[in-house]
Length: 51
Image (tube, rainbow, N blue to C red; front, top):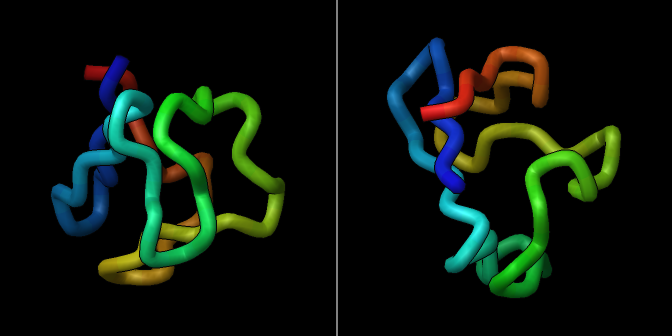
């Protein structure tokens, strides 16, 4: 599943994760730490929409 940042358009793809920030491939969006933010613009998790 993919989630898009409503602020900047960054796509979080669960199959890829966010390896630059220590998030392993396969990590579900709901399982991201509460303090995880968009790596592009710093928006919080609630600024993302399911694609």
